[in-house]
Image 1: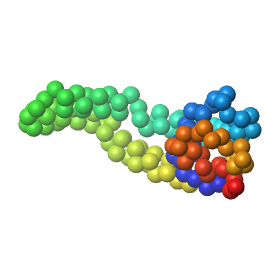
Image 2: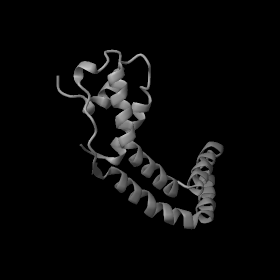
Image 3: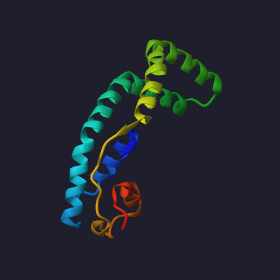
Length: 141
């Protein structure tokens, strides 16, 4: 199965949300099995994301939001941003390079064979959004 890293990450997130005893054992086993296959991809994404979205990034973002929330006139906002941008000058240069590289990397397709789930074992109780997300794992009826 060829999907983007981001799609595998979202698939894993949806599979984590359905770990429930109300579903049949076969379905739960297949979900668990596939989660284990995807786990290294998720760990790699989270590790790279920590390098890209640093404390400085979140601090810059927090202070940017605070400027917008606490000031009304455009001139004051512009002056505050000028000061903020000067303070974070090196970090902003890093963000301009690292964020697009990360977004490109996470959107690249990779190959991973996941186990398909026989349609007869797909629970009727699945929410529509979860069903649609996991649909790529279901065998044709």
